[in-house]
Image (cartoon, each protein chain N blue to C red):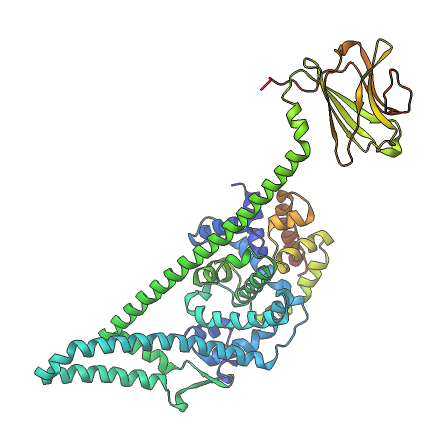
Length: 342
Length: 193
């Protein structure tokens, strides 16, 4: 990787704007102590962390300190509760196992019982520390040095090793169980989102096909000649194209913004060939439609045609154009597309 | 907490690592204004900002013992932690996709806990306060575009792709802009000495 790329990467990391994928790569690389300009990275991290120093400082409400204290107590209590549950389970199991021994071998049983009792006394003493030993923080009580001793003391007792192992096992089972459920939920949500996206694409495709069906169908003909059509009056914004399947005497007129003709009139399509104008047929375009199929065209020689036009004519039709020209297009152009017939 | 009043951040955090609650209280008293200010600047609302403060000090309590602060900077670590948690809440409020990430131990270690270079100068809050004017002047000398890119990245939590979409410029250009903005800021900062 070039120096520039590395510099850009550490800048993005320091500014906290890496995308998730790159962040994970960089994070793993960093964890493995990969080769990086650490001095530069440190400098940029210091710099970005200094940005908030120019903000006007706000004092948090005093209640927030209490909330922090409560959160810390909750963390402590959570650990204690878990340990207590595991301890009780272990003790119950141990008593059950040792019950017959206590009736038959009194000396041994007494020794084991005393050992457990000592453990219990220690735990209870630590769970209910004397007021003078507790450290006050923000109006509450938190961990004290005695708690540290408690954890150290417990690590020497074999029964507590069992407790810790059990606790770890339960925690792992709980964690992986929860994680699996979470993953499944996450997958379902993602799948639903994907499904919605596919449905939306499908709707768009169907809409496109329904709008452009005649055009798609027409492209099954070969030797198609496309004539662009332009409106005579720019204010009407008429546009379109005429597709002529020269070998099959078929045409497809695609026209936009052509006004609905008066009841006594209709539109007629013409071709000018060697200075003679020939009718290619009348058509009526329904409001909201853009395509008109014209069949049975006279044979059109592309090289001899000079113009195509659309005029407004009486409903009975005309032999020669009599009304105003609404749109026209050049003749004698090359075919726009040539496809094999399906 | 007179016994912790004058001790440096690094010693304070070592005491917190030994679960000395008074040490944590001292850290809170020192840093809660800047932590709260950062949280309020970034988090979607005041309630979320308070949640950030609570989470930050809870994480300090839980994680202080796991980090080698002899190769770290308590100030940078704490501000980055605050920023990361606040941005996380902001992103969750902004994008339903972000809420698919579970806030569990692995997520916290990867995305919330700061990953600071081991070659970093160890500055404390007093040093930062002394240099406040320098950083302010250095920022003032940036172009508006550079300031905006830094703002979008650092305070708004947008990643490079999102900034690219937002500004309608290619991703590569955004990468270069972030690099140029930060490095110019650094040069300006050095020149302010």
